[in-house]
Image (cartoon, rainbow, N blue to C red; front, side, top):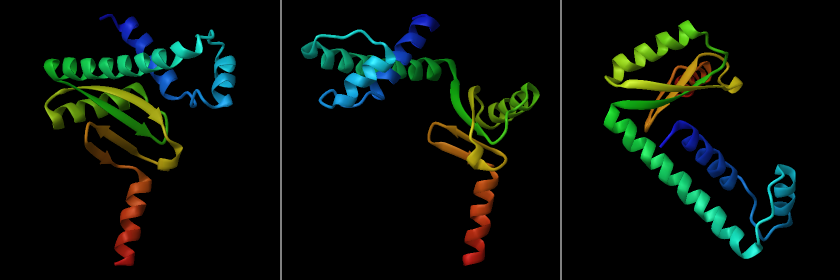
Length: 142
């Protein structure tokens, strides 16, 4: 499956997951705002269900493909924008730690105050200032 096809399916899946309930008037306003063509009411739920299931199938396909290729996806949350050099250094450290190739998705999260938080599957590495302050607060309360 091509990257463009996977991207399109992911986009439709994300759109379907964020839509309000079709029985609610907000749903139809949402469609108007997004300039989505009207589907016949009986078929609309099936289209949405198909998009949700297709999105899930793509996620499972990507997970199997990554496992086969020895790749792990990392959600990197940073308080500030990372330079290319900083990201390369972080990815190299994560690859050394996991023994796998790391595919990083970076996003900004100002609530971290400072530092970086990395989520890889069920593992979380939290080097954010917010986490450090939380540890300090717990230590002071004890």
